[in-house]
Amino acid sequence: MATWKPDPSFYPSPRLAAKAPPETIAYVAMFDPERKQPDAIAVVDVDPASPRYASIVGKVAMPHAGDELHHFGWNACSSCLCPNAPHPHMERRYLVVPGLRSSRIYILDTKPDPLKPFLTKVIEPETLAERTGYSRPHTVHCGPGGIYVTALGNAEGKGPGGIAMLDAQSFDPLGRWEVERGPQYFAYDGWWHLGYDTLVTSEWGTPDMVEDGLVADILLGARYGRRLHFWDFTRRRHLQEIDFGEEYQLVFELRPAHDPTRAYGFVNCVISLKDLSSSIWTWYRDKDKWAVRKVIEIPAEAADPDQLPPMLKGFKAVPPLVSDIDLSMDDRFLYVSCWGTGDLLQYDVSDPFAPKLTGKVRIGGIVSRATHPGAKNGALNGGPQMVEVSRDGRRIYFTNSLYGAVDPQFYPEGIDGWMVKLDAAPEGGLSFDPKFFIDWPKSHRPHQVRLQGGDCSSDSYCYP
Image 1 (cartoon, one colour):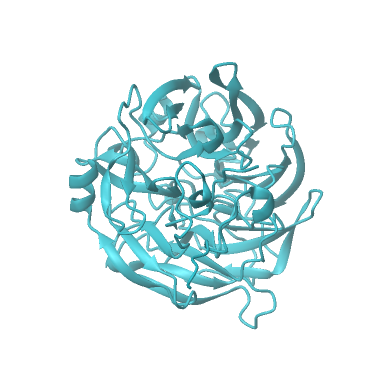
Image 2 (cartoon, rainbow, N blue to C red):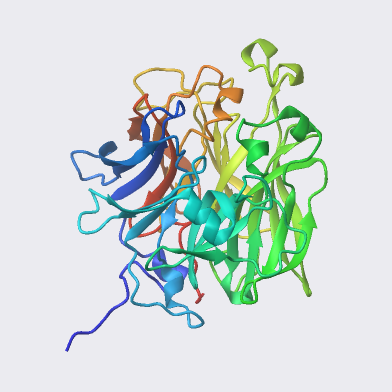
């Protein structure tokens, strides 16, 4: 008699996921900023025992040019083990890859050979728009009930943005997730607290506000996203909005605690209009409502205007531009990417209201152009951007491109792509792996990283 078993990369709790075997492969989205050659998913060897360690060992190119592959994810994850929406016989097998500019979604099969994923389905923009009312898919999360895809725009490329649902097995678009949207209009990221039946969304702007880069009038007029939205997950209804205030622009990446008994999470604000600082905020349950508190402020650094891009010369400072964050599986360490200054910061957030800086490296940066022990040429540009943490918390990977239209606003000479890995000490502290520096092919720039078997921003859990 045959017996079905859950995918071995599904874990009921983050505690067990942290004991998973180390990853040997990373999948990395790469895009052509000129939009002339097709984008691709690169396969990177991250096994230190391999002769091809720290190199691109394969790639699968998309059939079109100009997609701008962005925040892709797995079709299924550990939430398949949840008692309220069990799907224990799903496989973590397919990569769901959105084209942020084209509105196409690609489905890649990583089985039978994880080193050679292949394209198995394309969801065309017309199909996505007709079935869900959305365009410009941005971030993919697998969760209870299917695949959740946040989208920046409506079918016409305006607003409101929101969440489109895909069927977890056929990948057919099912429809829009929201039943009652309330005041929510902008979209960016979306994630959840399964133990509290709450979904959270953040904000950027509609496609016409972002596709040509950051628009100074919109930014200085405080008209980009600055709110969090809290939703009843099961009933799909808007419950609460928190406005961070006009000073704070671009409230982006959501990192809820992995432990489902903890009702808090972290979100980054990219820039303050008052002093160009970046900030990290904790959202938390306060009696019967949700609340936020600023827990980290990272100041801008004074700089010679001659070393600054036109956009910053008048400010005589380099903003940190915190553009991504990631939370370790045990909820102890928060990793913070400062794309402007070139810092990757590690904070001990055991107390989510009193973070302590425990590690720091610098690489790239608008002014510092800091190098890497494994780089063949000295000055590097770009800075820490998309960051991903291994399930055991010992390895941190990141790449250096933010978004095709924004990169040249801060790095006018064009970004030379790279990917690096840091080693994290168990009690805190960071160091470069001197053997892991990938000088990215000049035709493309690297973006999102996903680790084989899951990582710290791929799964949600129902048990502590």
